Image (cartoon, rainbow over the protein chains, first blue to last red):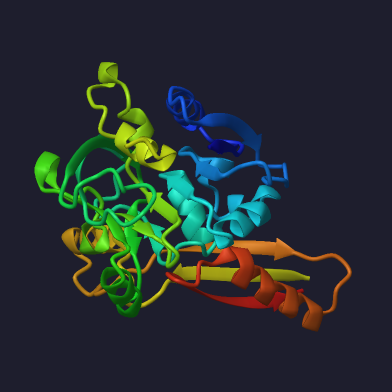
Length: 223
Length: 80
C-alpha cells in the first residue's frame, strides 16, 4: 500500500507519521508537499498534526484551500482511506470531508497529556484490528479539539456508528469538552477518519505505548 | 472602499473564551453582565470596485473562508 503523508507549512508531526509508516513492511510511504496536485499513485493519505499556516484564522481553515486538497477530496470520494490526525482532523472538518467543528478546549488550555481512547467501532479500515471497547493509550496535544456539531449531526454520527473513539475516564477523562466525549469520527462512507489524539506518537516502546501502531497496522491490512 | 467584518460565535455554540471573560467581569463587580460572546473583527480593503461588488465579494469571502458556518455567524459593513 502506497501512502502519502501530506506536508503543509507548519505541519510538525509529518516526520513522526512517516517514520511509523516506514517501519511497516506492507507500506511504502512518501511525503507530498501541499502544492502538489496529483495523488493518483497513492492508495492512502495521512494528514498529519501540527499548525498548518500557523493556525491563523481557524485551525485548518487556510490549509483547506491548498492545491493538494482537491486531490484529497477526490481520493476520499473514491473510497481511498484518508486519516487526519489532530491538525489533520481540523483540516478535514474545515474542508467538509467530516461534519461538525473543532472549537477551543472548554478549559481554554493547550492540553498535552496521555488519554485513554475507547474503540467504539471496528467497522473501518483503521480499526478492523481492534476489539470493540478496547482501550488505547496515546497522547493528545491541542488547544482546539472540542468537537461540536448540531443535535441532528451528533445523532446521525452516533446512529450510523461513526464515532470511532471516545475518551475514557482515565487520566482525567474528556480533555477538551468534546460532545459525547468524541475523540475521532468517520465520514458516511467510513473511509475518512479524523482523530485528535496522536497514534504516531504511541508507536514505539521507547515512547511508552505502542497502542497507536494498531491503527496503522489495521490500515496496512496486517492481521 | 473597505469592508468591516465581525465574526462571532453562533448562539447556542459553547463559547469558552466568552464564558471565561464573563466570569472574570462578574467577579470584579460587573454583576450586570449576563453574557459575553467572543469574535473576530476583520478589515478588508478593496481597490477599484464599487459598493455592490465589494458587498458581493465580502459575502463570498465570509462564506468561503472568514467564518465557519457550523459555529460562527458574520455581519459586515462596507465603508468608504
